[in-house]
Amino acid sequence: TVTGVQTCALPISIALEERAASLGVAVRKRNQGQSSPTLIQALIDASADILVFDGYEFLPETIEKAHNSGTLTVVIDDNGEFSEVPCDVILNQNLHAEISMYASGPSGRSMLIGLEWALIREEVAQQDVPEWERRQGLILSVGGADHRGLGVSVANILEQADVGPFVRAGGFYGEVSMSPAEMASVMAHSMLGVLACGTTTWEALCLGLPTVGLVVADNQIHVAESLSKAGLSQYLDCREELDAGRLIELIRSALEDPIRLDRVSRDSRAMVDGLGGRRVAQALDSLIG
Image (cartoon, rainbow, N blue to C red):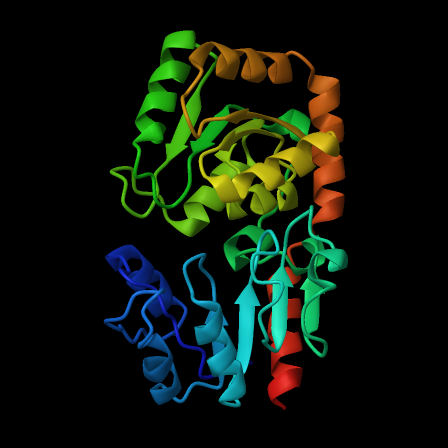
């Protein structure tokens, strides 16, 4: 078990605090934002065993100073943005991740690259997953922070198009409440997911849930493209606008091909076994001795 890991999110929602508490993780709030030049001193003063950076606004010099302080420093990176930054561990859990993305960076880093390291929640990994033909309905989720209100818009589109019954999972700041265990169960028993192309995508693969992907942020486009290239999903780019007609076309096209969906379900489960989080924990534990 890795101990002394600090959570460093600002602002952090009550929902995230409750989630941390349920896992026995203490939350220590800080006043500095990711790009604050004074953040490094606050992190060093925390005297953590491990510092994990997961965000796009952290300054490279902050991560480098954390690394130089002697604290085990981990960077969660999706698209190679931090390829040049000195640290102890790079974690890229994506299908499109390749070692070559970090070839020009400092040597000596531990590279946890690919879906075998996908950070799947225990609630997902522990699900009893039925075969695809025994599933019913759709699940809609646009991610943890739906600042644009796409969840409501997409839900209205699905209702008007009458594509069948669906369950909407709200984010941390949404009005729809669903616990991680409840969401995992609904995903495991749904025949299709309409999901933002974030971490939930890998949970869907673990559960054998075929998806229509929604790209709602710039960092998700490579995820969507890699899934499409692998024949596992089609996607709709919603960063500029939400094309209702195209969305319904993708959903209906998927539902009208049950043979393909069954194949996708089986292939998906073979790609993500749900043990990535444990592998990461073991890797970090071995590094701190």
